[in-house]
Each structure stands twice: as structure tokens, then as C-alpha cells.
Length: 115
Length: 113
Image 1 (tube, each protein chain N blue to C red):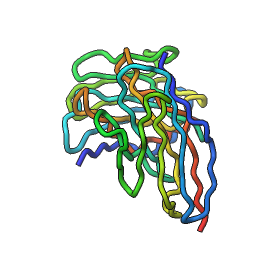
Image 2: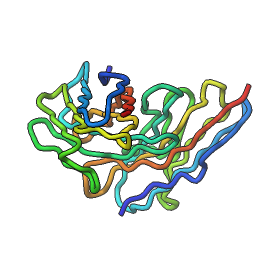
Image 3: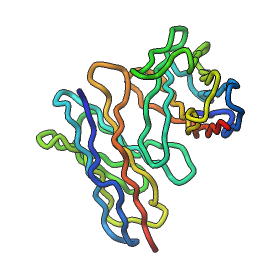
């Protein structure tokens, strides 16, 4: 149980294009989903927290107009990297949490490479 | 502000050696504590968690962790590691004010047969 999927698992795009990453909770409903970035050999950096039906809460320093987050249902959240640049290349990880007192369940991550 | 420290950045062990990875947090109030593991090429998985009760928590794959409130610590232990334990280990604590987890910088464990 408690499986989270991400699609795509990797994507390569040209600079200036937009990329959408999906995060799905497959066997539970997630009231809250989180989006992280992980740089090589470093810890996870929280980008934003999204609650179903509400606007996402972004961490300081994360551009909300660049990283668009939509959490339209209890099983799906999307992260769109708009006008991607090479510095946006990273490993993006989502997590989903069934309820506030529950643990977070992590997706497998999406490797984004911007050329 | 809440912070999490993992002082061991890279640990190298031989199989059957004992393991202890340090985790210290700064917030002194009621805390929940987590250890996550990330095997090479895989996603983060919950290893164990402490919410309340017995401060010695047992997790999957023979891991355990002890919550010592007076030391603000939640160290991860395993009496005898295996090659398959090679992974990155992250300690995490919920932020006391905001709905988010604070992760430590991670400890890379390499176990050689």
C-alpha cells in the first residue's frame, strides 16, 4: 500500500520550453502533496506544499510563476516548470500524505535535463 | 528554527559491522521523528518513525532508532549491516510551526562484502 508514482521518470527538453510532471497517489487519497528538488549528493529541498483544492504554499526563494503547481484532485498533483533553463535541471521528487498526522510517501522522482 | 543535523556524511563499513548514524534536532518541544532510506536509483522509503511511547523504535530490515529527549537525538542503529544496506539515509523532523518536514543532509552508507 501507499504507492506514489511520478510521470515521466525522466525528461530532456530544450531551454525555453515548459515541462509538466505528474504525481499520483495510487492506492490512497492524499490531502497534501509536497514537491522537492534534490541536487546530486545533497538532501531534499522542499519547493512547495499543496493541499487539494487550494493554492500551493511555496518556500522562500522558489518562484511560483516558474514552478506552477496544481492539485486538482486527491490523487493527482502536477508541477509545471515553465520556460525551463539549464539551471532547472534537477531531480524532482513528490510526496503524498493521506492525513496531517500520517507520514509522507515518496514518488520515485523525475530527472529533468534542460539543454 | 527547527534544524536537523547528521554529522556522519559518509560511512564505510564491512559486512557484519555494527552501524550507528547520528541525528540531532534543535526543537525542544513534542517531536515526531523519521528515518528515511534511499537505495541507489530508488525512491525514498520510510525506515522507521517515532511518534510517542517507547523511545526505542524498531523499523524494517533490522534497523532501530532510539529517541533520547535529553540529548535531542534520534540515532539509527543496526547490529550487523549487509551489503544491501548500501544507501543514503535521511533523518527528518516536522517543522514545529509549518506543515513540512525538515530533512538532514543525509548520510551515505557504503557496505563492502
